Length: 513
Image (cartoon, one colour):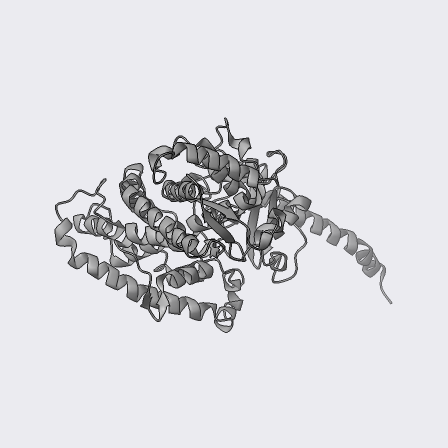
């Protein structure tokens, strides 16, 4: 039998324990105030929200944002990931808190291929990144340097036109694979300005340079579970991604070693040339001159040179050709826009063999066609992710250090609160409009913005404008098999860069100009 004292203790014990529990909770609240986190969809144990990404993450995240808002917190495995889906939220990340979000998250595959993050795109934020980005912006991608490659663009554009012309002359009803031709065109330009010559055949391992670049871009867009759930890193070996990355890295490294060696051995003829504005110097020549001069604050090793070359190709070739492919797709789907563009282009090039870069300034509709296509089809619908280096507030929400950030440029470009008839192709919306894609208007950011914005947009725009103007000037285009415009397949490929899933085919005929 319990004594009176035991019964007394028994009665007092529950309220005392409850009081202690409340006290501990109150003290913990004082030490760790409750954070105001962005809304989140429900998550599963271990994997978090990984299962909700889908094959096309930009579309899956768009659907989730419609339910949970323009600033949404996911958990991919053990990693908090902020999803940004509005211009206002993008401005807070890319401008207000740009410095806090200037780092890149770790990527096992990027580390394997890009010489342990020696490139610009995936290098951690810091002095090394600032130095190499400065080199590329000032010496490789400045307005003067882009202008110095004008002769290369014009020569390759003339070859593009001749190649299509031969197909027309051979058979007026032949179907032309525009996707393949445009990919080859951009690859040839980037090869010429970066390496000094074109590489169209096998370069190493029985693969063409174009195939290697395609595999490089595909691998960089792979979603690797091990980066989010470290103890599941073995899956990368099991599914073959790590093996493929190691193989591609080895083949590319062997090829780039030969390229650098060729340039080093032939560099004597360029020793007296100045870097700025000399079209005889390609990207590798310039980097080797900087290496010899020792003008940066650290040794410019060959691995850094090779990593920068890969950046130029991954960004310069794939995204530039992707934009051209979608531009031609939208023009074939929208014959009224095609007719307006034809009229302006052919008026500007009247009496000439082709349209020059000087003529392009007289073709305002060409520029707005490109803008409208980039609004609907940004080549990278999810901008390359960032990572916070400190605790910050975004739109009143607490974002912890180490949070990854994905900005859905695809969703922002289709926001009905910003764009009238957002799903429609209407280039006219950009006429007499100051909105551009240079990172100043956060409702339109196909090239990103802030410190981590794409430094090559001038180069890409120059290639696309000249090619598009001359294609429309010299040829008429129609869909094969008498297909209607609304029957053109707009299915997307999966990956970091979003191409058309099916090649763009068209019947091409010579225009009467």
